Amino acid sequence: MSKFIICNGGYRTGSTRLYNIVRHLYEIKNVDYIAHGGDERMLNLFKNKPVAPVYVIKAHYLCPDPYPELRMINIRRDYRGVAASIFLLMQNTYGTESIDRPTADDIFVKLDAQQKITAQCDERTDAIVVRYRTLMEKPLNLIKRVGNFLNIETTNYQRQIINIRSNIYTNKSIVENLKTEADGRTELRQNHISKYEGDPDAWQKVLPPEFAQEIMERYPQ
Image (cartoon, rainbow, N blue to C red):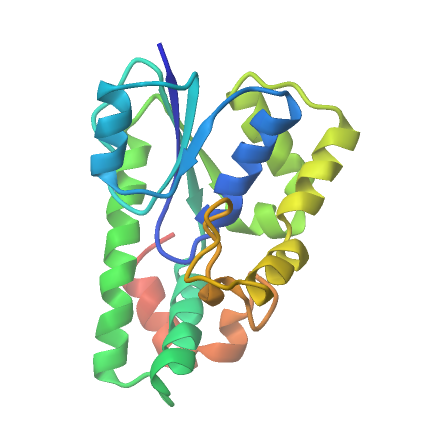
């Protein structure tokens, strides 16, 4: 029976980097896998017609009911950090200059989705939770924990290699050389380049204090 590894997180939570860490864990152990950033329909297709021993899937959606060989890794980021990242992206895309009410409402739609994913993961026994801050500040610790969850033992040297292959500087190099909308192997896109290089506390430089406070009141952490 195939294994299904879901790298699950809300928008702008680091789920793409997590997805690539999991890919590299299987690669470094020479395990065949199929990786996909698809939607829930793709997961159902894989489940119904499995052709690989392992599927690694990046998801921004609520995952299905527990499945015998499904494992979920849920990455969480401070809601204020997510909001700041979304605002910076909107700024680059639409020229938004301030967090006015329509902009705030757009951000809250994304945060609401993250909150639903978080609540669902808290109720599951086939999932672990990892933190965006750990991903950015102590990636080797996160790689080891994810590997242990997937029963993949790694040496410190192997974890360093995985970190080099998936860190923000490698990702930036891939994105800067993109000739299509997304890189088919890593799922990286132009909007994965971070103005503040993934700083977990960048929200302090981006969000007005009153908006950061409103986020804390709406989404207790």
